[in-house]
Length: 247
Ligand SMILES: Nc1ncnc2c1ncn2[C@@H]1O[C@H](COP(=O)(O)OP(=O)(O)OP(=O)(O)O)[C@@H](O)[C@H]1O
Ligand SMILES: [Mg+2]
Image (cartoon, rainbow, N blue to C red):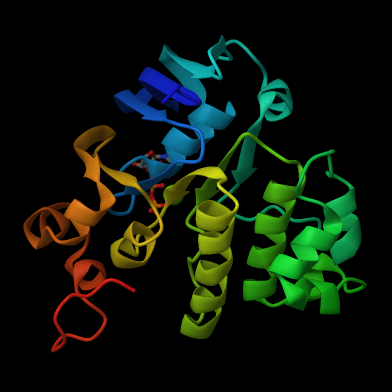
């Protein structure tokens, strides 16, 4: 399959500190990639370097065969890089609907489709961003990422800090976006088991380098690698006495 996104030997960091030391990855249309790793291993730095908001020291990024390495973040967004940042970045003083329409661009992801995906946002359409619960803010952040109709959506720990019932709601939505709608995505997560059930492939970062890359299903069954590179509590099946089954 043709490559949609190709990251080649990307090096990035802050000031003089090189955090990402030569990371390569590729994504085909409709494919989803999990990026795993413990705190501080460089996951956000990788996402932000693709978005263009982190200092780049080397490497190349291509989208649909076009070199976007030299483009500014807003130009990369227009080219099709969608982003749901770790800190959500919604407008707190705009309503839910204004948050969405402010960034909307033509494409399959319309306001109606976002509301269909997240009925809670439809109910809260006239509430201000700052009045939303953490889960609703995250749904709005995902909605904002989708309504710009990107070619590929980068999601940075979308489940972080959410109650289990909200995690399940978001996972159902993300599964629909990725599996049913075929959105190409990079999903950064600490919860390995959850994210590996919706992605095709996975890579694990350790101190800014890729230490594992492969099939999501195979990694899901590989306790040894998960326990070595992803924190054990997160690698462990939710119900310890049950055999590992896919959900
Ligand atoms: N703005 C910054 N200035 C300097 N160093 C930074 C900055 N942001 C991150 N770092 C450093 O870069 C390294 C990678 O951080 P990064 O945020 O990419 O990790 P992460 O894998 O996303 O972690 P987490 O799971 O906690 O979000 C860390 O050592 C971190 O301290
Ligand atoms: Mg991070």
